[in-house]
Image (cartoon, rainbow, N blue to C red; front, side, top):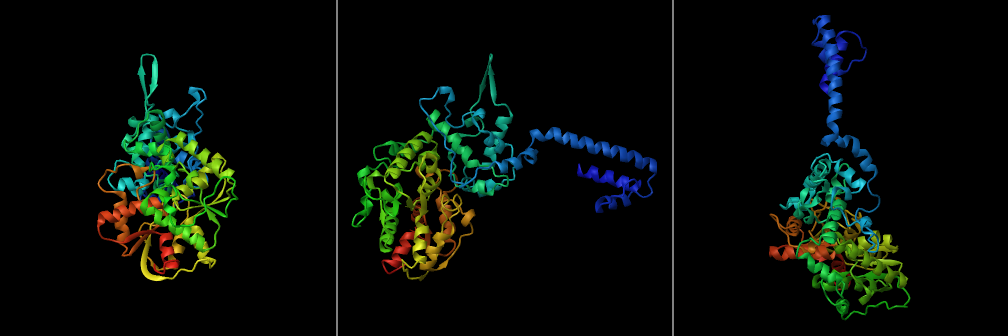
Length: 504
């Protein structure tokens, strides 16, 4: 198209029938000196028709090609979801509604929303999403680009099979994408962050999971333990009894908020990992000790706290999440809670961004934000050491919610040197725990957590700092597998060592 336009303009210049002369067409016109007028006139007519036919041919070709993004990209960017990237659109499930009105995620092409379909036809196939995907980088089948292309081709191809007089829509999984591809995603959002046309891969993947889990009961076998634990009497993925939820507080004078008590200044949402995982408990204890030392009126819900529902929701069990969210919101509202501090990035994201959809609007702060503020206000007095620290950005704190500075401010108050990893802040590499992958087996050529830990060790730092218990456990597992390397610790633990224990 461009070449035919330039040649046509060159013949017009040579025939002296236009005053417009560009640098390229003018240069080409110079090569036409000496050509007869008749030949130039015939060439001018032929080139203009060639140009028009090429344009019209491209317009016919455009709808069935990847170049359709020329038309769809702008509206796709305009219609992208507003607010925090970590928020998923709620899928309201009413079991009393007529069966034909119930929707359990995306099972066939017609289940995809208009914005999800627009996403598919906006892909430029540039591969930026694939380049930053931790699953693809560690040899797993998931490529965000190929997933979108597979769904697009399935939708564009009609995706139907005719049996007699009936037309049956074919399932998206496994006809467009395989089960393994759907379950490899860690929902880190790196693909969404890199996409130049704002395709929301994570939302579509979760919608595919919703149908597999709720409509077909089809999910990785080991993930069943997660669902059984959350659905059980203890309501936590660790399948621990509710009576064990306060074991972490042994020896600490922690106020447990009972029904009817006056609400505290700050409610500390401990989270399941912080309550039940031995390694994460140290960060939980450190956070409470620091808040008490700073004179903050803090309390916990104790046995009345249950899982926020994040792992169930990212796994695709939206109905289970809905039940947990409604119950937790009722508990928090009845208690008169207004401010919540959470040490888990996943709990933070769910409480801050997803509970408002269920009537729970609170001021939610991450524990690193509150601790950084207490240090700035002079309510905590850490001593700085020369030990070198590197910080791992949790996806659900950093990229999904743009909280990058507070954890680094805390580390800056206890360490003389913060060594940044090559992939940090909005381009940080995932630890591998998100999207309920924490409870699933991992295949591929390498493990995501070990890949990230090796990157952290490459900075030469003595400590890898985290601000999420999932990241803490995943990177600590990688450290144990490596046998030698930097220690892994939460920012609260490091601050407590420096402020309360006299060492960093």
